[in-house]
Structure formats: structure tokens, C-alpha cells
Amino acid sequence: MPTEASICKIQIGEFRNVDPDSLAFAFDALKSNDPQTQNCQLEIKMISAEAICQSNHHSYHPAEANFYACTICGDGIGKLISGQELEIASIIMETVQIETMDETRKA
Ligand SMILES: [Zn+2]
Image (cartoon, protein in one colour):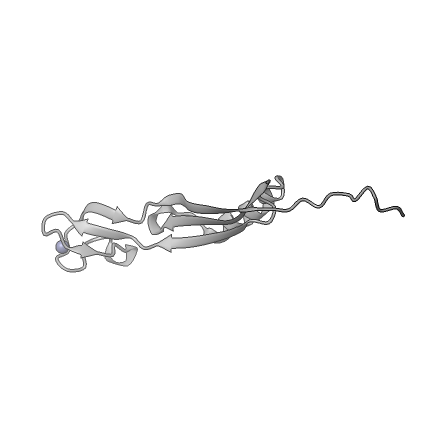
């Protein structure tokens, strides 16, 4: 049985600088090139950035408004825990029926 992709789930981190609308536009433009992807829906999940500060190991959301410093102690980013993702989380495939010409039917 032939299969086609029905849903493609993508995760985009906040720090990836990927515009989800542009990605969706490009996906829709390309998916019609292949019968296995032409009906595929794109689902985008944005992942918020999370960091651990350098010296006190606080967990916080690094943001431009605070110069990416720790919101508790003001220290810099020690380690970025999330926010750099750009990955396919899953692709759901479905089997499809192929309609064949009934040769016994005459016009
Ligand atoms: Zn801190």
C-alpha cells in the first residue's frame, strides 16, 4: 500500500531566528512537488529559550530586554538548556487507497 505524509511536526527554538510564517510558506510551496507530501500539514511548535546562569546556576529565560543576563543574580549565560532547536519532531504517515479504472465499465 502506498503511503503519504499527513502531518509533519517541527520544533523551532526561540534563538534559531527562524520565522515560522516563512517556513510554513516554503513548506507549502515545496510539498506539492511530491505526491507523497502534497496533502501534508505542517505543525510548528516554538520552544522557549531557557538558560542556566554562570556562577549561581539559576534557571531563567534569557531575553534581549535584560541583555540575556540572569533575571535573579544578573550573571551571564552559563549554559543554554533550550532555544536552539530546529528539528523534525515527527512525521505521521498514512496509507492511501489508489483508485483504479474499472475496465468492465463501458462508457
Ligand atoms: Zn543567576
